[in-house]
Amino acid sequence: MATVTSLADRLRTELGDMGKSFVYQEIASGETNRYQLPYSPLDGLNLIVNVDAVDVSTDVEVEETTGYLTFDDIPEAGAAIVVAGTYYRYFTNAEIEQYINNALAQHTLNKSDSLGRPITVANLPVVEEYPLVTLATIQALYTLATDASFDIDIQAPDGVMIPRSERYRQLSNEINARQAQYRELCSLLGIGMYSVDVFSLRRISKTTNRYVPVYIPMEVDDRSTPRRAMLSIPSYGSKTKPSDVPTQDLNLYEGDSYEVTLDFPFNVSAYTFQADITGASMASPVKLTSFNITVHPTDNTKLILSLTSAQTTLLPDRCYWDIQATSAPDPDYQKTYIKGMLFVDRQVTV
Image (cartoon, rainbow, N blue to C red; front, side, top):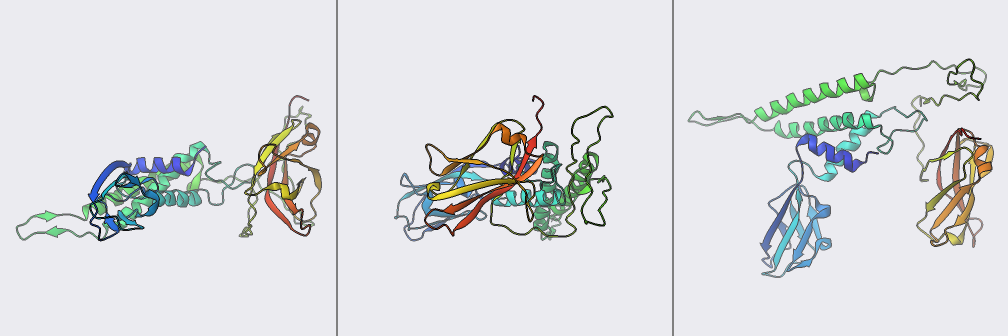
C-alpha cells in the first residue's frame, strides 16, 4: 500500500532531489537570536539544534526554504551552536507532498474503484503509482521552469556569452518528454486523465427515477445467487455534502465472527454506545442488525465491536453502519462519532 511519504521519496528520486546530511557549527555572538545556515531548503521537522551540548530543537523556529533559524531566547555570547540535519537541492518536504496531493487529485478525478469508493493514496492500485509520480514530476518541473524563465543571457564586452536561458529550454524539453510519457502510460494502461472509459449503458426507470440493477453475467448452468455489479454512479455535477463525522469502512467474511477495535480520544465509560447496520444510507433505512459493543478490558478509551456468525450470514454484499454515543449524565446529548460502509465477502464453506 502506497503512502504520501513513499510517493514523495519516489518523486525526489525522479527529480534528483535526494536529501544530503550536514553538520554546521557557529559561535553565538550574544546579540541576535537569528542565524542563517548555508544549507537550504531544509528538513525542519528532523533538524537537531544544540547550544553548548544542550538540545534546543523544540525551542527553535526553522524557515525551511531560506535556512534561517530563530531561537526563542538569544544564545549567550561564545556559546557553541551545532546544527545537524538534512537539506535538499530544490524543494522542501511540504512542497513535495503538495505536488503528490495535487497529482493524486488530478489523476483520480471522477474515478472510483469497483465498489464506488473514491480512490485515495491508501487504495491506489500499484500500477498507478509510477504514472502518478510522473504527473507530480511534471508539476515540479513547471515550478523550476518558472524560476528559470526569469534568467536572461549575459554577454560580456570581450565576447564571452553565458546562455542562462538554456536552462529554461532544457526544462521545457524535459517537461514535454514527461508529458508524453504520462500520456502514453495512461493510454496504454487505461488510467488517469488519458484513460479510455468504457461504460455499460444503464437504464433509469421512468416511474421511479432509479437505476435498473446490473448483474454480473453468469454461466448458463450456474445456480448460485446472482451477484450485483458494483458500478460507480455519476454525480451529475452534485457536490458531496461536508461532514464532520470521520469515515471508516469495514470488511468482513460471510459466516465468520467479526471483531474490530475503535479508538476514542476520551473515556468511553461515561457514554452509552449504539452501532447499527442498515441496508441504505439515505432516509428510512432498514435496520439489519446491531454490533455487540464492549469496553476494552485494559483501555477505557477503546471499544470492541463484534458480530456473531449468525449476524454476518444475514448481511448483504454492501451495507452501512455508524456508531452513536449517548451521555449517561445527560440523555439528551447524542453524537455520531464514526460512519462508513461495510463490505461482505461471500463464503464458500457453509
